[in-house]
Every structure is written in structure tokens, then in C-alpha cells.
Image (cartoon, rainbow, N blue to C red; front, side, top):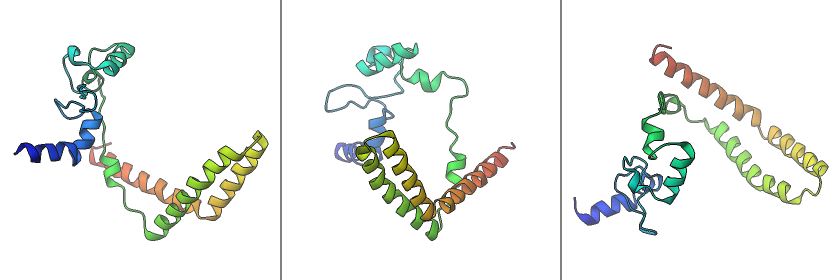
Length: 157
């Protein structure tokens, strides 16, 4: 692989996100020259944040959190089995999200008293209920339970 292609993958495509999370081995943040990697087995390579983190949790490297904790794993089977929302649910969820994204901050910044906040909060709850919140919630609750049941059945639980 050419250096240009390698740099493109690491800086633009999925590597960009792996780098920011510290998942790419040997990645150095160009902004500060610090090593950014979780799976670093040499404490001498810890950057200042990693040193503080390790001291706080009583570990040697960031990798210890992921590699040396019994039963520490991420089972993504159930989330992968979630079904896409049907159009009516997706439309309601989008409208509710847009409403909350505008009205929530307005309430936070405009309420002068606890009573104002409670009144505004109830108005928001009433509005999202009228927009179909119960349908959206029921769909995702059922979707999750179906996926989790299928995932558990796949591993014999």
C-alpha cells in the first residue's frame, strides 16, 4: 500500500475514528505529537492523560482496562439484530427528536423558577405524547426484547 493511500485510510476513512479512540496501533496525534492508543503495553509510552487515568484506576496501561478485567467484553449480537423502524415510527421519532431538540433547550434557558420548569416540562411531555411517543417507545421496547431473546437463544440462554 502506498504511503498516500495508507494516510488516506488512517486520516479520512474508518481509521480516522479508530485513531481518535486510540484503537490503531502506533498512531501519533499530529496536533500534539502524543501517542494515541489504548492497546499500549508499555507504560513508558503513556501520554499525560493516560498516566492520570492509569493512576486513578490503579493500572499500568490503558490496555489493562480492556485486556485484564475478567468477563469484560462487548457482546453486540442483540444490537445487530435490531430491525429498522417502519416509516410511521421513524417519522414520529424524527418529529419528536426535532421537537425535543428545540423545546428542551428553550425550557432550560427560559424557566426562571422550579415551578416554571415543571410547567414547561409537563407541556413538553404532553406534546410528545400527542406526537406518538407511546408508539415509538413500544416499537423500540419490543424490538429490543425480540433481538435480545434471539441473541440469548443463539448462545443457549
